[in-house]
Image 1 (cartoon, rainbow, N blue to C red):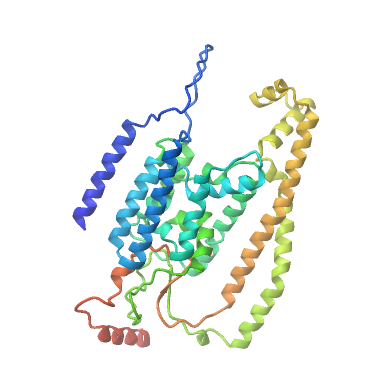
Image 2 (cartoon, helix red, strand yellow):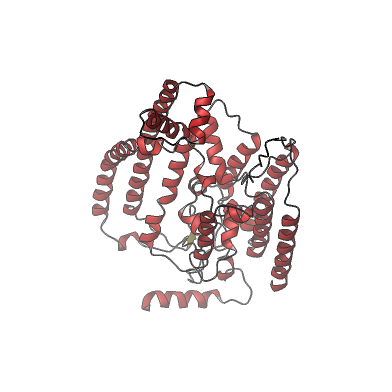
Length: 441
């Protein structure tokens, strides 16, 4: 194991050096020649790739997902998962520069649905849909060894700590908020939030703003003690993967056969994704639980409507993120004499020949779309909050240790902790010790 990690480490360093040396990509079209001495700015997004290379990316994605599913469900090998994870970090992260990634593809799909002028490439659709399809059949094996953002965090996990359950629940709402905002911004044409605030894009492309690099460094530093903080408490694509994984046909299991409740895997998961045995009768009487659940069900429509109304009130400040709305405000302030200094944007607009009335009408239309989207945005968050309340009111009896089908990343760390199926292990003695520990603490 030590030699394999040493080999991976050296291959990783050689790849980074090669990436830096050959970082200048081939241009698909020749650069224009400006006689005025204008210099082209350095772009932070990677240049377009040839169509055959884009199809190669899809092939590698499918192959990696197939291997990850096989390693997690059939071979049950954390070592193989780790090697594949490093490969994905190199290929999809540093080589492909994190673009297009499945996480950001959510915005492309939404924008294509609401903008007839945008033709979404089939490869982008594949990066969005293929991981979800695999998750529906095999669980979150995409998170285990294929996602470059997850891999970047997984390799820095050193001494993870377990977070309190209430804190996990509270922070777990943030990905839903991020997903809703990203969909709203993409649908209205205000921009791609996920790509704009990707914490690891600066490392993958060897260049980003100082604040973004600082954010990425903070996430990696935090990831040494709080395993995969972005995946657990920010990733918007993780919301969709969580839903698909709960419906998955097959899923990673901690033990290869029957669980003996030896408790050895109890603290093996750094992501707090192992459900422990619990007896529903220990919590409270059934009648009290039913009354509270009924109350939450009746309250759900009220919460959804109130949240939707609150979201609609945010349409003015949210719409200012759109370029046309900001431009209309600047033009209006200039016409009223409240803004004397012209900007490049206002000068370009006045030179375009477009009337201010047309610009104002466009800005009002965008604000109307934000108001409708605000209702949906708020209603969605209200539904999520209501479902969280309902889930806290439902207690299910569980007799064995199981990986949570939604939150488990199929990383395979728990495999080595389970003694079932291993030679030289007295399962009966382990089971007796676990029972004694449960009785006497």
